[in-house]
Amino acid sequence: MTTGEPQCNPVLLATTGDPRAEFRALLALAIPVVISEIGWMAMSIVDTIMVGKLGPVAIGAVAIGSFAYYCPALFGIGLLLGLDTLVSQAHGGRDFDECHRWLAQAVYLAAAYTPVCMLLSLGIAHLFPFWGVNAAVGAAGAQYLNVLNWSTLPLLLYAAARRYLQGVARVAPVTFALLSANLVNWAGNWLLISGHLGFPAMGVRGSALSTCVARLYMAAVLFYAAWQYERKRGHPLFAHWPGPEILRLRRLLQLGLPAAGQLIMEVGAFGAATVMAARLAPEALAAHQIVLNTASLTYMVPLGVSAATAVSVGHAVGAGNAAKARRVGWMGVAAGAGFMALAAIAFLVIPGPIIRVYSADSGILHLGVPLFAMAGVFQIFDGLQSVSTGALRGLGQTRLPMYANMVGYWCFGLPLGYALCFVKGWGVVGLWLGLSLALIFIAIVILNKWAKQSRALLSRVIKSEGERAPS
Image (cartoon, rainbow, N blue to C red; front, side, top):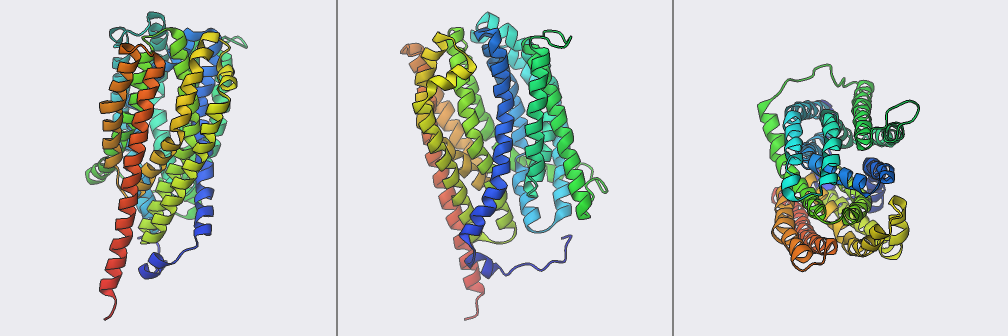
């Protein structure tokens, strides 16, 4: 421990608390994180909108190139999700040096995984012709990927610094970094996609290069923010920077591997659907990408609430407050589902205007409207599974979400979607129906797991205190 502050009585922590104050604290942490998540997704949306002027092939190229990149890249980000548990619980226990040690191990892990990630992305791109991807789309997608690949190390370093800052409840720098990075990305797109102010017209490669610059900027901003914050607190971040520690790396991987598996199962499922859609006409792939981008944008809200919930639950567990851990977990679940109910209404009522933000192509509009209807149906379930996953991560439970996503998407949703799309001839609508049913199943399983685990945690505390009480 690095502080002499007295610890609170576990009995009081298990039985007292102001739910309204706890909810306000959760929102104070969640809102900046949500804005950050929206800022993260906005970069992809801006890329899609700005290359959209080049036509359906360019939109499809960004879609298929992003799939090839983000499957291995998000696995790397998932490996670092164990920081949510480790840093937040150490911070809740007031052990600030321990927080630094976990960040250092995350940096080493990010550096080690970077070359692996880059090679995997290139390998996936070489499979485009064998998957039946439209030739024009595949060629442009490979060009996009070849440039985007160079952003891998900055992306993973940004992810490590972000998880660290969120774990110590410093979320404002994360929000600033992502919002300002969107301006960097937008300016880069404007300069490089069509060529302005003397810059070459690089098409989709220009969009990828702009993203590389924005990610380098984000990593630099967050590490500077972490250094400044810790210096002011009297706990210099780099003063005693530790070397690699095998036991700590192993613990980080024990938590991170299942979380990474859960991410790759989920994102990979929608990526696989993108590959299937790429076998259809460019308009079908473009409609798929537009709806997926928009659904991913609304998903950023429960994802941000999920991250805040994981940190809040971790803080409570680190402080020995089981009752608070359970309360803030359920508060997060309710907040995430509530927002997604509003998003579902928008998807069902105004799909046309949303699609026209991306493209005025009549074929894309015709295919996109029914896809938005299905996306609207699964919105609430998406919110439930996302925040429940975060609450479980705060408890250090990361395996069940991985298994639920594996079974739900890969054993049920994708096979059903493939059959409906290509065997039954329902096209891209069939793909989305399979994914939607899978997501509903996953949400039910993960929410039930959180209910059981949080109840068991509280029961263990009450039982332990009862056994220690004088007779």
